[in-house]
Length: 290
Image (cartoon, rainbow, N blue to C red; front, side):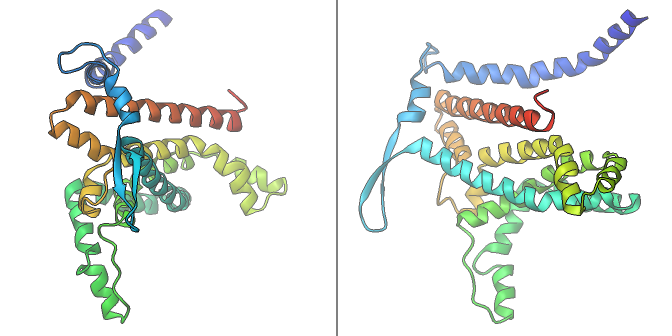
């Protein structure tokens, strides 16, 4: 009987395994293959080395010329904006997920629908909508002018890119956290209060540690696409600064497929390493190293 159950489980997992092999593993193998080959498909590490050693000169506001590591600088800018966007999503998303989880069932469904509605619209349309809102003659500045305030210049800045990232990826932070909090055993909260914990202590010592799997999932689902995005930076940043996704797209358009694959491969390795570290320290802190 036990053998039959294992056989049934393996059969049920077969479609997912085939799907993962074709659409996840095979593309990653091709990316790695292109990253370590040249135009003649001979093995080389030049593409990887170029990412870390390529330099360019930039002119400062005072006229001085400074040499920078081109792609490392682009990556650090991408990481900075993605980290800020992820932090903003977490700070606003966690309280909202907690409110949703503690609300009545009917209210939960309404709130989930409101969170999901932006995801039903096309990604490009959402980005263009923010262009209309943030541009110098847009809705925001029109509203500020109506109230008698000075206009603000946001479009074409890093702030505009962060706003676009937060808006587009905000639901990916809320939903994983909500799914964990909604399943939280309320008896644990009652026990904590009986042992003398106030509301903040319950949140700090019980709720937040138990919700860490959802937090980690949310951070992962926001951070990764934020780092590799390119359309948001092009439209809301007015193309004034490159992110790592722009660099990959630019190399692909220029038909430098091997270097584009190398950038994508390095980005993938860095992100996987960061995820592994976060998961390790989270497990050690929350589950005692299990």
